[in-house]
Length: 459
Image 1 (tube, one colour):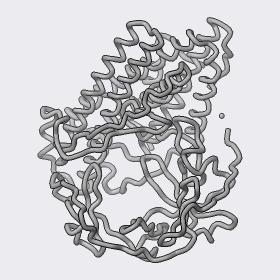
Image 2 (cartoon, rainbow, N blue to C red):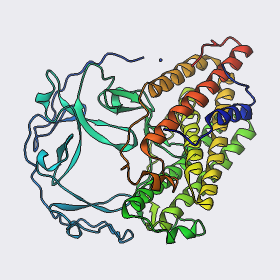
Image 3 (cartoon, one colour):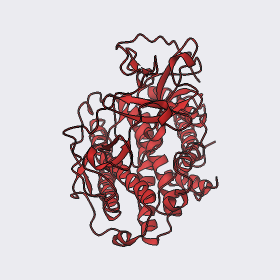
Image 4 (cartoon, rainbow, N blue to C red):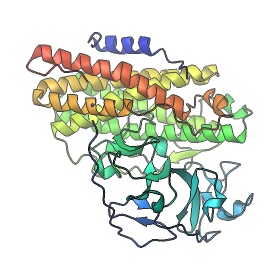
């Protein structure tokens, strides 16, 4: 896949903007034992760790339509409000999320496509990917358990000795247990926009509800008249609502970052830039909500859970959060947004996304400069920081970039709206890690080493 992103030029500009010049990882054994904390329900059970698996194949016991289900929608003309609106096939039900939509339950694996199994979920069910197993018996000496992929995907695969984890609890703070098609590993989900808001190692966003209080009413009005197929429109709506939720959460991330900088006695210029970045993220969120509304779905954020967001404000925790949210998260977000702006064929949409990319680049450099300042104040944290970056970058680059869930027939049309396919988005993330994050980290630790007794090993 050929990227539009001029990664070499972007990397050089990024490093030079910091004034640092051009800078010149491992898995652990898995000790796995599943002790069921629940009795099998419709063929599925859960380990004490919360890992869901399938001891036996049993037909799902559906209870449709469900009483009391109301999406409160009506914004998406192809969507639904209740289960009774879903009538194109048997066993339809309405999924309430950023966009309400109909899906159709399965009863047995035979109702699903090849390479899928029917996962029973109480009164409903869904066909999900099955990578090499459909029941525990397919995994000698192990179990057929659920896994998480980037961008929120789920599926089932055998737990093996090659896995580094089985649940998020097995991973370090800021990482998730992800599946790459062959094994489970601890990594960072790079399918994000803006600065991710991490709390207790997990990204938080606010649920979305009907409304348009956050929409920029003046943005891209002409998008209302685009002649899009239902599939392309749905993908674009979902993408910009996901972007909006992430950018909205980024406002909280920068609000916290400002408090963290002040708690450390940071210089005024860093605090000032953090406040300006907060205002940028507010504008980005309104832009994304506005684009989604122009594409036919009006949503606004509900309450954002900020509990425990300020629990541990030690220098190490602040450094850890800044490395994950800013140095990695924002750098990747900037590269993804630049690629999106270059793919968008509409000049006004492309210009809006290019401005977001420029802002995110500035936010990323703020994170790197803040880390440099913090490490000069706390040189004993330099080596743990270098190791954290090295592990995270190595884990991400060890995973294949090519993986796709977007239907091939809609991909070029969606990308013209600035919607990156999964494969393209992950490839951009890998290029950003390889050509921006790693060289920037090496330049940082080289500068710190030259200034004092800090190990000058590379990331």
